[in-house]
Amino acid sequence: MTPRNTPLEKATAKTWDGLSRMAFAADWNPETAIDWSRPIERSAVKDGWIQILQYFYEGEWQGLEIIQRLMNKAAHLFDTSEMVTYYSTQCYDESKHLFVFRTYLNKLDSPPAKQRAFDPLVFLATTGPLAVERWLLATYFTESLAATLFQRSLELDAVDLTGKEMIRLMLKDESRHIAGTRLGVQTLMAHAGPIKTALLKLWWKLFVRLAVAQVRRLKRHGDPIGMEPESILEKTFGRMAGMEEFDGKFLSDDFARGFLRDRVA
Image (cartoon, rainbow, N blue to C red; front, side, top):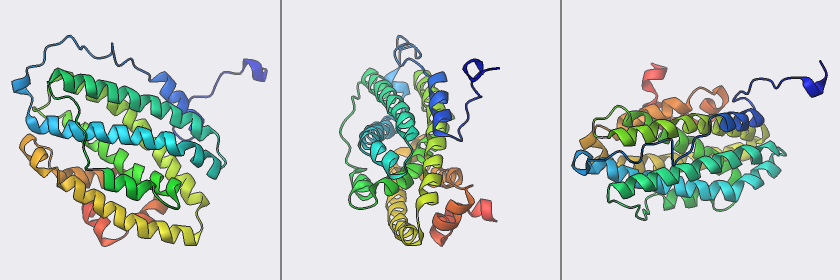
């Protein structure tokens, strides 16, 4: 069989091109994939869920802006042009997520309002030297957190049918985003020498503590609906664990191990 007629190999999450192709195959239309004509009983939707969605919306918006700002720099830094193709698909995903969040919140008479909660984390993750590297590490935490929150929301009575339909679609994207960020972190570690790694480890200690503190501030919204921050954090750290080199460099201190005690016991 000539190369021209050779069928494409199955797409996998192990390469940037494979992740892009997986995104192509999993595309969904945010206007038609969800039944927006279904009535939503506002009194049946808990205020805590709505408040957490407001944070979700802000996080998605800031994530989209940062990807667009740094994906080309990452591709040039690591000499990997396929990163641009993949991160372009993730930008498209984030734009869909923003649309469905906005549509859903508007149907609940709770349009998105500007949240300032993540501004310090965004500043810490993207300002100054090593911005690409810090962005990739920070995103590994935030994408893992988002997937954990999405998964938990599907188990809650506080979330209505339309909300769960929306979350299921986004969760499919998030699993791919985590795979992409994992590949990005692996790429980072392959290119980082001992001095850069030492600096990133110091930065990570500060970032992850601030991120955990911010998640814990959601307790007043999460506890009443069954989305307890400590449980969410343990599962988030559990999602991040599994890459031996990353675990040894970034999840080996007492702070991180406190969330992984069930895994290391």
